[in-house]
Image 1 (spheres, rainbow, N blue to C red):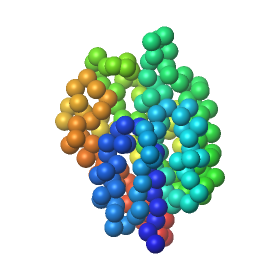
Image 2: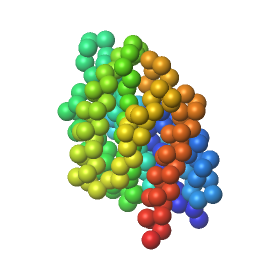
Image 3: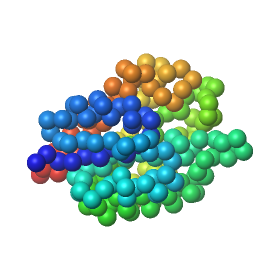
Image 4: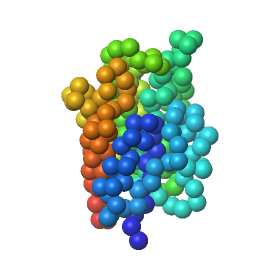
Length: 188
């Protein structure tokens, strides 16, 4: 029986998951949650349903890009302090499953006109919050932000947080590589 891997994330994850699933099909059963994972508030509401009743060996997850979205009132959809509390609770609940956890950092927010509005520095700030939580909890880190940053012009759509089809494929390959390393650690 192949190891089971769950991908939790937003539209960036939705776009790269087919590549990741295809690349790992011979070594793992990889599934993406059935919807965009949105902000941490949605994660708290839906996590039990997404996890289901069957155990996972690895959960590769991300929240952040929706949390840091700036709403019409000028405030973040999920303020940084609430993001931290929510993410701590999500990590606690996922750790309780016994799965090996891998956090994917939020990919870069480009400079430019975005709708909805997001600020590049907020991606860094929210990633810093998340990184501290992951380090405290011994969660593996898949730093997609650092991976994508030097190649944004090549991978990301202009004035958009989303990636081109080719960019999503490159991210999917990177995620598959990370999960492969984690699967090797599980097998030891």
